[in-house]
Image (cartoon, rainbow, N blue to C red; front, side, top):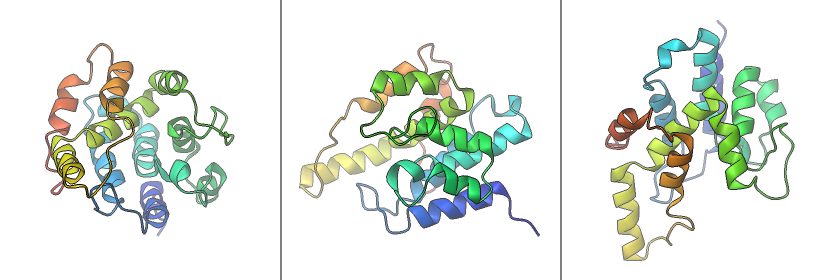
Length: 189
């Protein structure tokens, strides 16, 4: 029996983030798992074709893989039969790649990064699902507590998440969905 691309994407994410932990000390793999759950709850999920929904789920699992792990590239994702549409979305979401998937010496400028995501419907939804998890009030509270105790240092760019959200959803089209997702208990999601 063939393994689905979504299962393959999940397995790649597990390998790529195997030893990684978040700032609050949880296994990093919980983040892409929640992003994959978030993306399937986006209000207009049903408007996408089966292939687009598959690409959305794959990209949600893989959204940090290429950017965070030099052992994984767009070509390595392709070699494991990740759909090209999902690879394209991962490329757009990776700040260390240009729009053609070439590795850059410096990250893409923030305005260019947000623009290229905003104009691509699938990349937009994966990034919003990512921002919803990163903006989760419970996770943010835990992180603030750890900063206060000296267990971790503060985020280098704490206003990034609201700024990204405002740039990506200027009309508030996803506002109600976003507000619900940031209140979910991340330990139960």
